[in-house]
Length: 183
Image 1 (cartoon, rainbow, N blue to C red):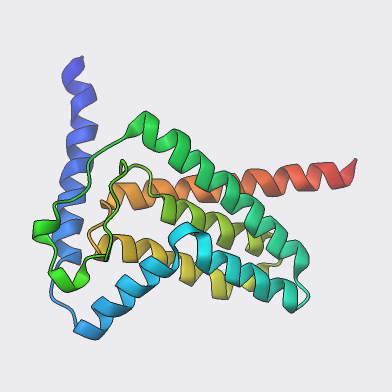
Image 2: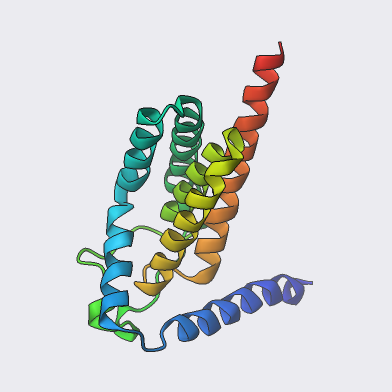
């Protein structure tokens, strides 16, 4: 019975290493710089706060509120609970080309990716309020999540876990909001 428990963990780790090797293939210096920049811009929700401000300025207050609320819950859940409960070590930076590395590599536990959780929470939260926003924010969230792989900050499973967490929190928040509005 214990061997059955180990197999999924081994399969996930094998997938993580396969994806790490695929993402590690050579790319242009310009692309590498853009991924480092995007990943850094998403630190502490800066990118999403700016997106929320643009939404408010363009009359999408409710979408901004849904996105920021979901982001806040997802960020707290990922960083204060998920990382403490699941943990995990980050990929070895020695296997990541220097130009791809973040100026200040993260040192916290790796699962789930807080950047991915926040990105998907904001994107899905705002988009559930106004589906037209999905065309802008979902690709942005995917790009932020990918940037975490590209910079060697996370494993594939960390990013997928964060994306699923952020999506679930945004969906739950939207459902609660609809329920409260119906009362």
